[in-house]
Picture 1: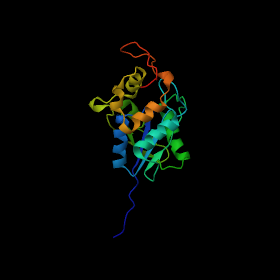
Picture 2: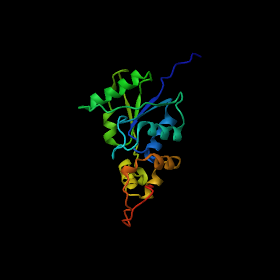
Picture 3: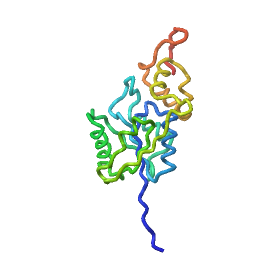
Picture 4: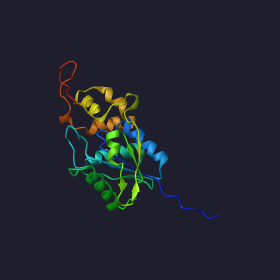
Length: 198
């Protein structure tokens, strides 16, 4: 019986990962189970040490590798810079072009954590001429903290954030998180936190 070539299922995820939390992790694991290749693009790769983007790209990549392992035939890490796109189409074309220049296969489906993110990728991929399949997963289900809530908790020296990131990343995040982005005073007592711990 003649074998037919089944097209590869290639998943795309674009995430800022500031920091990588349980919601991100769940979506990535889902994509890995359902696809042949998974391309993870840490966004805003030019940003670091700001309130919205405290971690650098190498630090975000280290977190991904700690959780999911090194790059493989299935898993690809490809940072992407912001370009100040004025339209959704300009941004998605930038994403697809970055993938093409990296020599990676073009994605056939996109995994989104919310409806706003999903609408960007409900498009025809210009490199394949095929409509992208968008799979929306609620990344903040079951009370999972958002990235902004986690950053606020870290700033305020609240340990609650530790329950919302992979356990293997807690110490890494504490080690690299910019101390200038942490409140030097304990939110509850008003006393100074001398070691800058988070």
